[in-house]
Image (cartoon, rainbow, N blue to C red; front, side, top):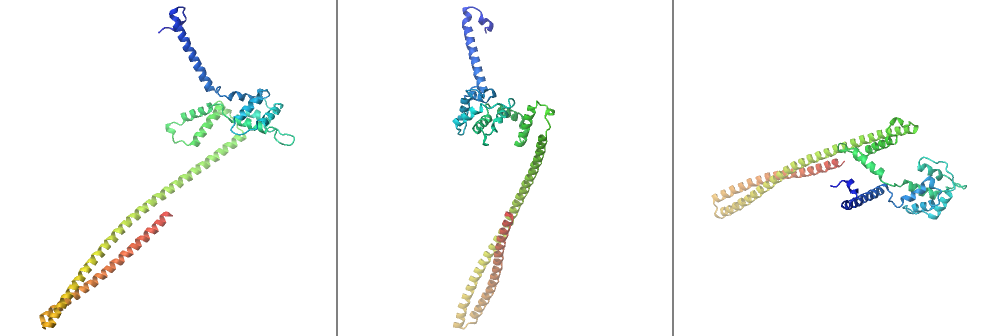
Length: 338
């Protein structure tokens, strides 16, 4: 690679390299200047018109046009003619406050009144306040993002917004006092603010305590409700199973009853046949058989009555259990909703 110093030596062999180096250097300087202008805000079209707010430029002739340009850029309607008239009248006012903060300087004119008690410069006050409130750049915001990003590390990810805001306020206060806390004047207002902050912090802690207690109570109630629902479900399943078994028992008893009724009918039919034969033939054996069959039918009828009694008893128990289960479910559901 050819050294830079050799590019400026006289000779045709270095002329091309020298011109190429100068061209690249010019392009680099141009790009750097454009970057500086973009970052500094000098490329903002409205920025130059803010000069009318400088105390030294308030009485200049161009300031009347500058304030009109700024007013047209605001997101609300302004009477430009009235604004310029008030500005021209304002140029005749003398400065009472000449140094310090720019908002304090302009505030000295906002409270001036006419002989009738009306504000002298209401339109100017509206425009100047709106313009002074606007940001000419994002440097402060970006610094705030940078600081919060550096402070809010992974091990502090659960930090609340309130704590982070307070930390940033402390950082801002320390910066404005050159990081010397002892230089902060202890005024009555500062003490009142400290008392208010302490009271606010205590109220915040109390609110957090009540919130946690409420959440814990709601969680416990939810767990109790779920437990009650599980117990109710188990009880209902057990009751349903027992009712189902009783209903099956009723069905079996009814089947048994039907089979016995058929047997009774068959015995009575056979007894009737033998009775007819005994009457017709006068045979004792036929009468004896008929009598035995009737006794059997009577015995079956007695068993049928006993079975019917069992069916009625079990059926009443099933109906009572069903009613009781439904009542228990409804009452427990009402208690769980409360």
